[in-house]
Length: 244
Image 1: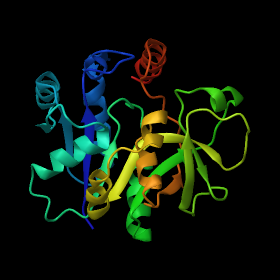
Image 2 (image 1 turned 120 degrees about the vertical axis):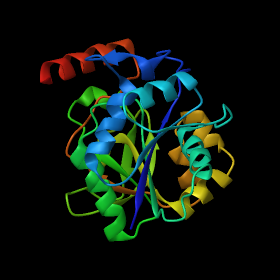
Image 3 (image 1 turned 135 degrees about the horizontal axis):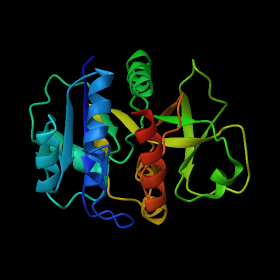
Image 4 (image 1 turned 90 degrees about the horizontal axis):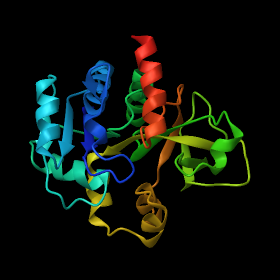
């Protein structure tokens, strides 16, 4: 089974403009992400972007990038457009790694890929344990609700995804910015229009659930911080600069 990793990225993020090209330890955020993806060694890595500046940055730092149109409404729509521009006849799975999570754990990338192959799954993602009570109501932290409690060996069905939840539960997890799809499932997903649920919550994975596409969830070891705000960037810089 062959997996291709595609990282969607664009400069026009509303909360932190120019985010992919902001530098940590002298390297852009998007280039940190693709280097993490390459370290996982599960398949070829591409960045899909509408911005020529991102293409140039990625290539300058040794990666591959594809220029897409500005029309994709979500990251998943963008990676499918990129997939259509290459020969993907030998690809079985497509992994979507978010371009703003430079601390994504390499072992978690490998773990999701393994879970998808071993379970012959259609669509998969990861969740990690919520460590702080305030995370439940933090709208920048997406939560995934599973039908049972996650452990290292299972790959459970997602019941729902939400940004804010008041009731705490053992089967609510911090959703990580990583997806993996069978190539046919990805094609099916992008054929549907955005649903009102997806638009209301700004969560593209709800389009899958709204159209009866099952999403399986694995338990991640790590809980990386995504770069959504200036505060996130400062926090990630501290971690990454300390590690280096």
